[in-house]
Length: 120
Image (cartoon, rainbow, N blue to C red):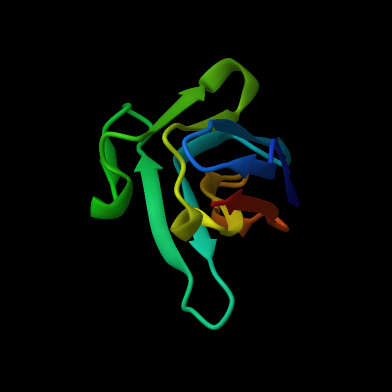
């Protein structure tokens, strides 16, 4: 079983910054891709940023140049540095990971989400 613990959400004024963290623990042989998604009220969940095991990244167009995803493989942790935040970034942010378990099963896991609110 894999657990994801997210932290770092909160309330910030427009133009401010936040840093989200997500640590994976449990039955892990290797963590492959890690990513952040978000879901605003009444909207579909959307990909914000993703980073592969090799460090390749991709971002939603709406966050390019403002958000940076990174990872610490030794800690099985992914980060999302969010700068120049806008009110439209307000959403619940979810961590997502692709994990290979010790018995070589591929498991996709989701965190419980952390609220990010940007005031204008």
